[in-house]
Image (cartoon, rainbow, N blue to C red; front, side, top):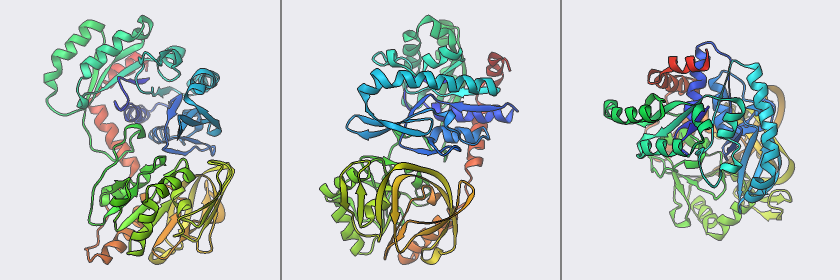
Length: 478
């Protein structure tokens, strides 16, 4: 099990790396996280949704992502409430207090049954913890850290982010707050995101080994990579590239990993104020609470600013909830329960919210402009059903099965789609950006082919080179 001295220590990516390292050694490996809080979700093979982190870890294991790898997913909705997703399916929305005091205990027991089954059917389960295992106010309600480790007698690796500073103090503080039983489960420590001369850390290592009789298992260098990070501590960039791409940072923004290729290729600028909006390309992203975020934009003058910049020639794009907002009308008696709501009106589309969420992998053929007939793929996680006389694409496959459905809508200088991940189709992104670059008399760009699989392998190889994997294997009895 990978636990951290804090949120953002690097648990998700080190879990991913260990999954790939052990898989490459020939073991049958799966990831597991009992509970994750995230607005970046992805479909599991069963059709339900799981955290993006466990989705990526499954790929590192060469496994199809399953809801078993992340039984409990919490999706914050605002007002101290979260939608609770169990085994891929939404089972309601609760307050933090209600969840803490009543809901989570029953879900934990069921999640441990899932974990027991995974352990019995695979060589190795690599478990990811959440936040810190020793938060004093939360320890009695823990269902993601040491309680899980104790349940299965897991070997725990404690990870700290040395780039933030205070990493030795963080390890000591964590170890001192653990019970004696919990300390016994700790195999050793990893210092993550290090820049500099490792030999300078030796006195600290010796102190930890002397005090706790635990060894430092590795010092992982600070790595630039293109693997999506956990979203809780994401920093939203403000980069004005050759094409000024602005993304509205909605209060309930979701699946913002959609825009990583645009950041790599050009730079993106997240905005929250009406006076900031003046980009060549304005994107309204996905939202966990579409209608409430539409009203937020309306109240803060952002809707009016989008319409003004649209009239002046900006190109407008909406993804999922953003597509719904840009349409003519939303009828929502499910999520916000506000009924019939006027949309921004840039796209010729109408949306009705359903009680049934769609979570699928999609392959589609574009119907838009110069990119007509291009094939793209992505995924959908939505409760809305939209219709338009000018669709953006035709869905030809759903979860690998033949299909025929229309998706999205096309406006004059705008389009919207339910296809999360459309910009990860680099051929599409290259042609779309070059369409905008030609309008500004800029030279066309060529996007280097990027592979998530190759990035996982590259990252994991660096981790292995800096990790005492032989000791870890011996401790696991492998």
